Image 1: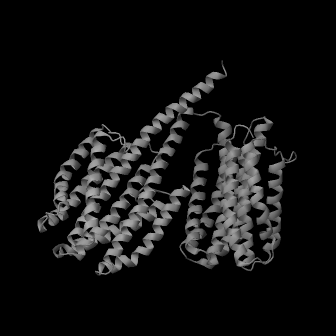
Image 2 (image 1 turned 180 degrees about the vertical axis):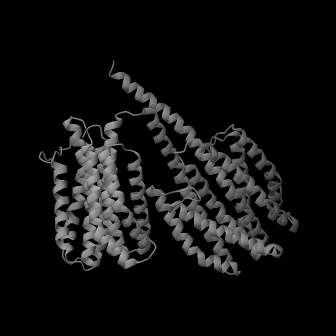
Image 3 (image 1 turned 90 degrees about the vertical axis):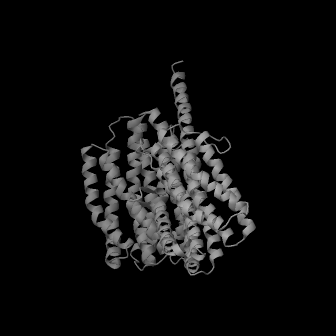
Length: 551
């Protein structure tokens, strides 16, 4: 009976967390759909102007009818709830007041749209469209801010702001399309106003997109972390780049229809990105609340494993940053690798600050101070490489000093491992496994760095590369089979065993490419590609070793 109580308690906590996450999902959906309303204000105005310009008239009449009905349905759902849209009415005073204001702006706007849809509109109706769309947009934007402010009580969560600004991107695509139509139709009296509005929207879209991908303090945007979101935002970014010449042509009255179609495609891709953010918010909040409910269960042991994992990841980052610096110098996927280098340098710096603020052990703190001392000039050189400044000297500094930064970072991992005061052999062994598995992450990057040093002409790196390959191979064998001398347990957990087998399978064809004296360009590209996947799989194994109840 005593054994049953903790299990029942855990089930109750899980159930409570799922209920909490459900309301969070509802809020995320409300943020998404109220944000979509912003886009619809501009989309409806654009469709009205396309009808006015007699461009695909029948098609745009149909679209305007659909988009106006959708706006009305969502607005009603936000006020009263709508099960098909998964909307729950939120009875919060600010939200309800804001919804009333939106409704008062929407009614005359909707009435005007219905006149256009019925094909009874005159010149005054289209001028009214021009006058009413921005006040409606402003009220809807205030409504979205009311929803996102519901998150302000939890400082750990900023994804609501990301959903807000990602959703605003949809609106900006339609705002740009609308402005292009105003510029190119008979609304000549306000051409300068619409041109300025277009340029502002264009700048904001580009700035926000960059912030969603890489973070932006001014906009309070986080750097994208989830692979699915990064992939989708990269698709949007590529599409945005191809759209620029079309926008320039459209400003001169050329290729207007093509530019507007391109903005519509951009809107759809951005909308998919917003959906991914909405799903991510639900998962993030569920994890955080479940963690808060369960509390400090096995806190000390798990906390130390996490510190060993994070400090161990720092070792890997020293080598990955060096590898990326070399790839940039060799002009291999330069823009992508600058972005990755910027991300990794920020991750190393932020992790170091976090480790410094979360440990009171004197020896650990002393070692962190040593790492900080070596990191500052290294970080400065990395920043120069990112900004294309003093390239030769900065690259030389990174090449000459990355191994010493690695050694000091490794000493920090050892300091964490030695700080464990438990006499329990199994606990010590588990901490050591997290260390060794984490070291394998670093070695994947060290091998690749050394391979590209050889490509660059540093032939004395050949012996180092062979030693690194041997170290990786030996440690991987020990992790799979166990090694008593190194205090490495043989795994019995089926998931960990399966993950290690997967790593071995990936490593076997990759190893000869590292050893080969003169690999082809295709083989070098293969190393870069497969090394990235290998690192991801090893990282999964480290996290399994850190969190699994049984090894």
